[in-house]
Length: 248
Length: 252
Image (cartoon, rainbow over all chains, first blue to last red; front, side, top):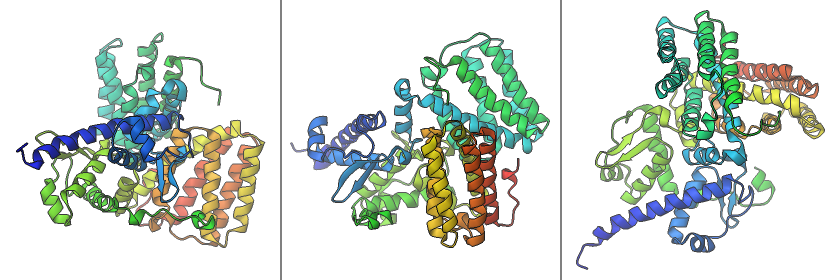
């Protein structure tokens, strides 16, 4: 009882932070999975704080976080509205994770793979257009490391990732690199992204990578772009789980 | 603009108490993007920051929390608040992207943005040509006709232009790709370097591009639609771009 007020303040604040993180996760999931549909109003603070069993302060804090992520629009006098999905910040770590974790119903990995294929193909083209010996050596090295493993293993998978990340970095396109890298690294944490093994997965990945590097070495932009695109889309089609995506 | 047209109040951002933390956040984001606080180094401690900005520690704490959400810093027990590597940054976040564009004196970041946007949008036009129904096609035609009438009013033109591109993205159906493009777009529409000159001749030329895209989508010609979108975005940027250095990264 004699402890100074400060001794209480810190742990309480930490607890409020933790609660807010949990509420944010839950609200993001409710919105991203459409359980609270786009355009709908969020229930008022009172009922929300009752529902989550937290204070109104924690609710207010969490709403602020969701506003930052583009999921909510707070308008004075009109309450808090769920934003249209076109305004969501899809690359926000929490939003992206929630999308990927609900892939089974949302199909976001199909979309993510298309975005990756487009961005990485443009980046492969950029490397082909401006290739330097030093850059090509780095890419060739990643390919060589993978080849030395002779079959699929954690180490070969890592070399696979390094191949892709090196090309992104060498493209010099900071925006495309940032977007593709974040999508790719987050997707790699998902079992559904790895999908199922397929016959000759290792060999066909090596062949694909070789084709990309070969086109870059020749400075052949269009072939480098196409080879990268086909590699990303093709290997996803072979390993993805569940029914084939709607033929769009 | 739409809000006042509806007679609804505009969001009262400026009046909200969180504004102070946002302003501090924007300032810190800019410093980090500029490299004043390089990746791997700690931010100054809370009291020092509070003093420097003349705000309370509560406001600083709030601002640091927002920085953390945007991936710019990591709070490590004992080590303080460390600036992360750029690849961890959420570049599509409006504050981060705005600071990145604002602090880049060359046109490189805008060239990169255009190269990123056009590859995604041309693929979405490709898909749209396969799946577009009568309704989407009618909307696109209407928008092209409306833009014909608006070539003397660049501001109104820009709004319909935006709707045209968004209709194609919605038709394409890739929400993630659309989200990326919209985030990229939202931060550049207000920068003068991106808009450049906007006069009648440019609007006329740009709508020729739109007409071509609509025509290829209506013909259900995916390849043609993709190429038309790619060329349109490239040309529209190159005529506005100017600048001393050649747009090397936009070559193909």
